[in-house]
Structure formats: structure tokens, C-alpha cells
Length: 252
Image 1 (tube, rainbow, N blue to C red):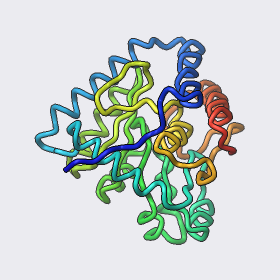
Image 2: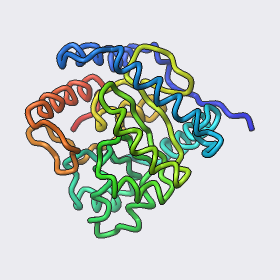
Image 3: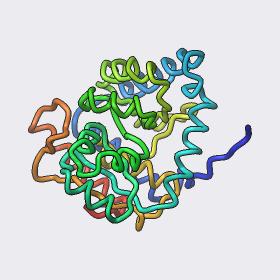
């Protein structure tokens, strides 16, 4: 089957700024670009090595998953759920006819909704670096929800553990990274945290800013769906999240 993925020009001014800020973030935290690149290449190799078991993890399979997801992203308003999401956020999104995207562990809030069945049916994908609550991520995998899985320098253990679960359910994957390198069917949409990277990802798939609604995004406190983290460092990360969203032009 032939298909194409019409995506925004990655050299556009906005895309460039969303990617370039990653260099500033690495500098601020003292992280090495090489570590990010090694993790990305290892994730790419891992998925290709398992593609006989899970054909959708192959290069062509990931391309098709991206294409199919893009077709669903562009036909309804979207709510992106951040780590501070609460049940009322889900309820409001459902009443307003939104489809949902969860930033990693925020997917757990769907179980607390007044309409859990509708909430899960409305979920288009999970944007994750693998440190969310595994039980919630596993439930999404069982339901066949695609994962937009991210590689960075210090999450190799997390993405390996997550993939060991996803492989059991033939979970569709889209792969992202945060380096300037061009890697086969592995995207760098820009951004930093799972939440703002979800915004960057949907923008990279030609979704209009007006379609995007953020719920559960805060910079003054750490959301309850955040994975294990150093509180002081997490607050610094949230400030960078705010900067990315400012560049993207999406209001919290």
C-alpha cells in the first residue's frame, strides 16, 4: 500500500525554534547531546530488531501508524492532558466533543472520569518517555492505543521496560527524539516534556493551533500523574515547558 504523510516543513521558523530550544535545555541541565543521540539510535535499533514479531514497529509500519493517526487528529478539537489533569478535565472535554491525547502518566485520569468508556474511546494516542505508571500505560496498550515514544539520554531503562509490555499487545508506535540528526521514521517535533512535546507533535501533523486545548498543565506545582522525579529539577522542567508552549503559541 502506498501512502504519504503531508507534514509541515521542518525547516519552518516555528519548527526550527521548537527544536533549537532543546540545545538551551541541554545546556541548562548539563546534559550531553551524544547521550540523547545514543538513546535514540538504540531505540530505533530495538524496534527494528523486533519488527518480525511486531510488523508495525518496522520503518514502514511506523510510517503507516503516523499516517493513520494524522487522519484522526485533523477532524475534531483536541484536548491534551497534562500531569495535573483531574476527572473534571476529562468530563468537560467529552461534553465539548474533544478527542484526547495523554501526556504519559496522565492517561491514568481516564479511569476516574464519569464516562470512562467514552474517555478511553476518545483517546487517540499517548505521548510518553516511559516513566508513567505502568499499570495505566499497560491498560492503554491492551486497548491498542498508539504510543508516541520518546528517547532521551537518561530514559533507556524506562523505554526498554515499556517496550517489553507493548510488544505483548502489538502496540502501534511512533518514535521521537530530541537531536538534530535525521533518523529513519523517527521524528523530532520539538519540545521537551511529555506535555509540551505532545503539543509540538500534533502541530507537526498539521493540526491547527485553534484545535488544541490544554488541560492539566501547570507550572506552579507538580501534577499528581508525574513520574518519579526530583521536585526541584521538575519545577525547572515545567518552566521550560512554559517557554516551549509560548513559542508554539498554545495557551495553558
